[in-house]
Image 1 (cartoon, rainbow, N blue to C red):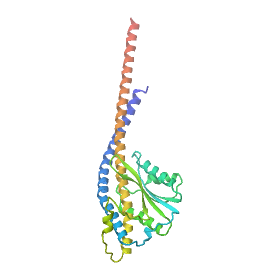
Image 2: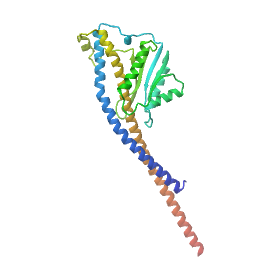
Image 3: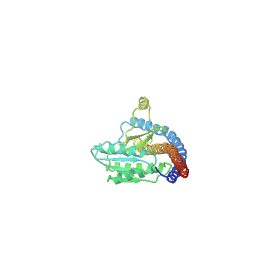
Length: 288
């Protein structure tokens, strides 16, 4: 059995750790609320721009655009969104696992665009090709970052260096559930039906000024930028939710450990007192 000094030292260390996890939980909860608000406010715009793109694509009468061009896949790019930090349970591991499954199923060449230090470090250690990396994004997802990523993949796709581009991120469902998903961003696939609204989109007349090609040329890059930005927002909200949950569990585990160590210490102290009393009684009996 450990000595009383060791038990007291372990209790103090666990109490210090519990204070840290409590503080991290409070910080994560505050950041999670802001991130959740950002996701909630951004979703209607994301849905609307998809519907508008679908309507314009239908009404334009099959206008061709380089970002809509479908060709035989020879090289695929995966934009992988993870966090820069850990201490968030299985959040990063789930995204990395989903990405690993996807790249294993690809029959063509592939490359990765790593957004977040955790994903970058994991795939770099395993020798994966990382075409570009974005780390140190910070607590708030910036639209400029999404624009930079979108500009890069659009240039590569237009130059026919990439034939398909997929986005893998963690969709924020609620505080306890974050779901890793994959979505295709290039070639752009305008939705033709969503929630039964597809027929309404097809019947809606459009007058293009100056032309359908010019409207699509302006709308398609924004559609891709918004898809990436939405992924960044979802990933941030999911990360802070997972971190808050992980720190709450760690705080509870620390409390249970403190109780267990305190009980062990009390038993050890009681055993020591009993031993000392027995030695005193034994010594007194020997003197009689």
